[in-house]
Length: 493
Ligand SMILES: NC(=O)N[C@H](N)C(=O)O
Image (tube, rainbow, N blue to C red; front, side, top):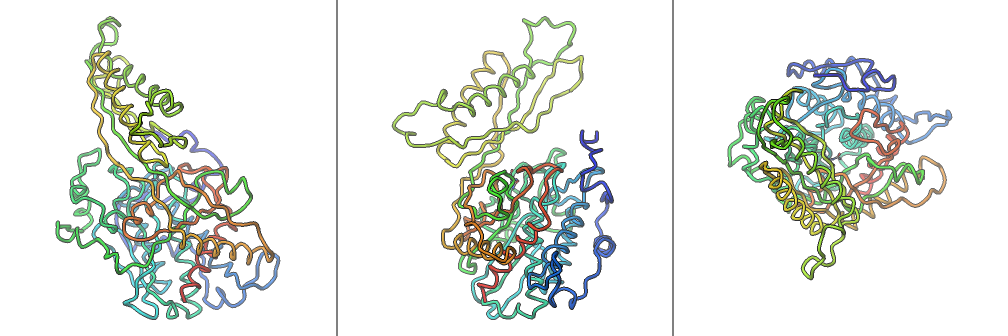
């Protein structure tokens, strides 16, 4: 595969040491961690460390910032690709990453296991093992050519906070069990169906998902089997947590947008997450010779796909020009509508051949689920009209659909207070109120909202950039993230 266009950038976090994973070995994972992490004695970790100004503090700088940043860099080097970060569902690198995370969970005093969808769990019972549990999660998979913070920051900051409690002997004081879950699939890169891990736990993943195939025809079930996970229909349904056993779910994630940076604050609270749909569009025409078939006689799926993609852009930029607001759909809002074609391929893909088939993806998001449905309806009709006019066939398949999710107001205000006091503890003075944001990006919290109340914290990232190796979070913002989770956990004692 060709190198990404920016592979020579001096700022790339992966450029120093790169582990390209071609085998699955927990010993190897352990060696990676031992090699990369400077040893920190526990006395060194919590007994009044010095902050950047040389002042003693109780802000656990070495665990919540320095070690957390080192861990982000460790995970950021665990990749299936050479020269960029890629860790898709149950790939060799994701198994290594899961083993590393499991080690960190155990070090934080958690009991660990891997479930039948490949999610990595770490749990501490606290004072009452039968009380409803607090779940904290984020994902360990990545997109292709990813940044190192997306997903990993949420897992690492939760483990750092629990490590501080463990070192201070406070895990036993938690009034309810706390369980960290590193979800195996949120991005949906390999199977196009996002949230395989969290949706299974929330009980909203259909058992038919086990038969979804990746590009090479391997099913989810095969991939699990390759990793020694035999899943039956019965064990699949056992993955679902009993809602009665869960108190709530929280997730910390990089914002992946520019709002926090523009207001100059490291943390924000999420009030809701936009709904999303993924389509796969396949256009078939008549394959032929590029030099001999007259333009008027072609059934060219590439030219048709180009027209379909421009149509998508027009609808998503100006939905009001395309949608008829009758009594039925009156009231929906598509203001926040965003649409993307991120992947396209053709067959046979040669410069002197009119393609026989073109396939592309559509990613569509809005806060308003009814609005998204109306846009998809209109888009599909118009796409079919274009294909008919061009004498090509067009198949539109829905690969993923998740409705918008609202965060719980009570949990959000607890997270807001935790974020506020973390920022205040770091600044040593009053700080501005914590902003409340909507999330355009999807999160495991969307699936978990089917199981329990959810709340989310966002962390500032440079330029709002994500799904890119240019993704960057200041070390001190990593610290603020860990401190906010720690402060939240302190309310659970
Ligand atoms: N946080 C993310 O980037 N999540 C998703 N996979 C998404 O929004 O596409």
